[in-house]
Image 1 (cartoon, helix red, strand yellow):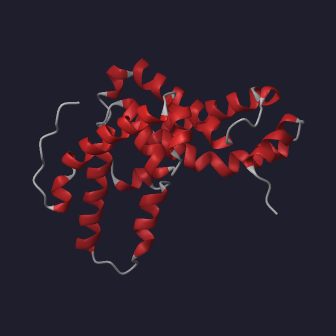
Image 2: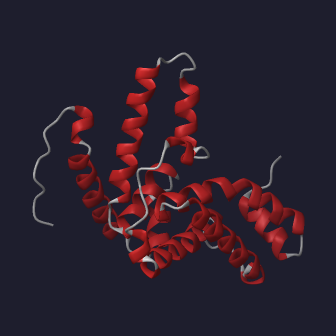
Length: 203
């Protein structure tokens, strides 16, 4: 039976290097994909993911399983991503968020798109690629904290309680944050479902 994240981390705490390698293998791709969607730069996402695991390893002796390992891991990742965005805001404005689909080759959702229908004709694939690009652009335009919450909720499928701990707010504040984010996305992505965008109410 595969060991749980907490069991692996407790073994890491006890000095088992192989358990840390297993955690890295288990979470490296999801972590890089999350960070890439946050900072929109693949090399930077790789560097940040490496820093996340360095911090996890350095903190191994102080680890206590008071929360899910993923909560702890993505809290470190989110804080690093937010700090990186703020520190490099002027450079971030110059980064294109319209990169080709190939740049997201490791992303789980795009990979499923490629494999979903091996016989899809070119027109269908181009339409779907344009749709995915539009979604990525809309998410990338969200304020940083809203973007993190949406990515953790929709792509990592974490619970409200976990996300609230990661972004350091109450569950009620998180729900309000997500409501504003999804309302913005609904308006931004209205053309995808053929609906005219409605004006947002006062926040």
